[in-house]
Image (cartoon, rainbow, N blue to C red; front, side, top):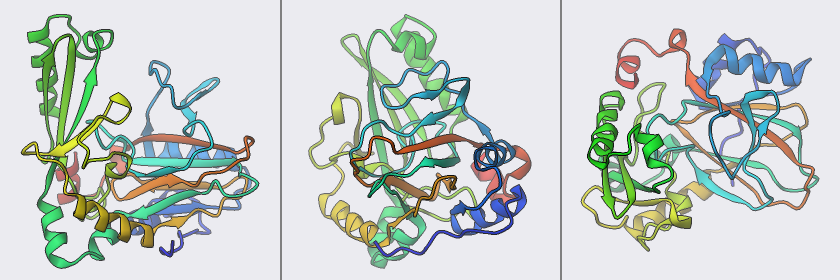
Length: 302
């Protein structure tokens, strides 16, 4: 790992932090007088936070009394670089992480700039990736798809999922099919979609958490292919891993730190660790309309 250090501005006002975030894609807020309050205040000022009280998840715990804040993924295993919810419509624009207690050793959050990844590739490969379309497939069982679609009629359910296309970004598509009583939702997007700030192509995705060459579902719930149904090229994935490994930086956590991440530009992950007392929280959401980039990028993004 030898990516550029994360900027740590002295001015912690929302305007200053957002300026650094727009310029660099990630910001470390350190030394705040009231760290937990700063974590919440910055998040609330910059984004419409997602609420989790009605979301079922086996991966995180919702903080009691605060449905906008959860623990990060349970366990002590390392996590590969990924973009939060890149395989679904409505992925959050921003992530805010807060370190209550770092691990005694290792367990650092990792970050990688998807703009820098593309810039480090050979020009021909970079151009190819900027044009490449991928499709994420998610199977949804009979206990969940009627809730997702708002109907138990299969024809109406497919129509309901397709109607989401009215709310998608210009480079995204969505479809649904049935095999038996299982609905598969197919979400299409660019492999290197534009960033929220500046509209720059960025390799910011979750390809590293899958095994695209195998063409199998990861843990039975996620698969990715090219738009034509072919598997993602293994040689391209290996080249991307090599570049991303070189550009990844580890967050030097101290208790009380907050890190804000542009989820359209930076992938994040985690080092493995052994300390069960490690405690890092996360909030995620969409950039408030008042802060949206203007004029052309904002119109393209929302």
